[in-house]
Amino acid sequence: MDQMRSYTINKGMMDSWIKLFESGIKPAHEAVGMPVVATWVNADHNQFIWVRRFPEGADVPAKEAEFRESEGFKSLGSQPGDHIAKMDVQNLEQGKLAA
Image (cartoon, rainbow, N blue to C red; front, top):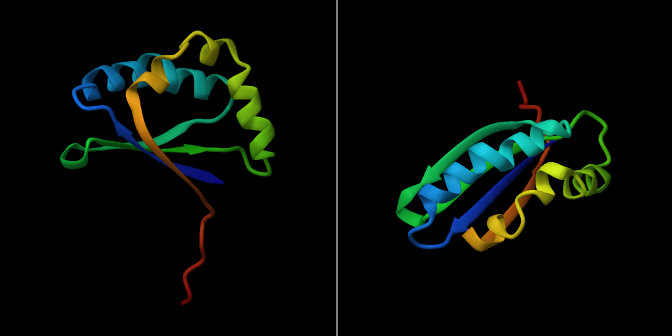
């Protein structure tokens, strides 16, 4: 299963958010087996959109708890929340197109 996360980043903080994401958030996810599979920036709306993947059959709440308890996440402190004005999260499952 994939999860699409769309964050509205506080005005003027996109550059520091991208640095934080690349140096801390992304590696912390990957360390617990939740790879980041895509990222986009919608500069017109100050949005950072990204997709993370859960292992097949994963218990999503348990995997998210494992991430929150990880040293990688804890080392970020309040930095992620300091950057984010609004967050939207959608769980996505691969669909099958009719032939």
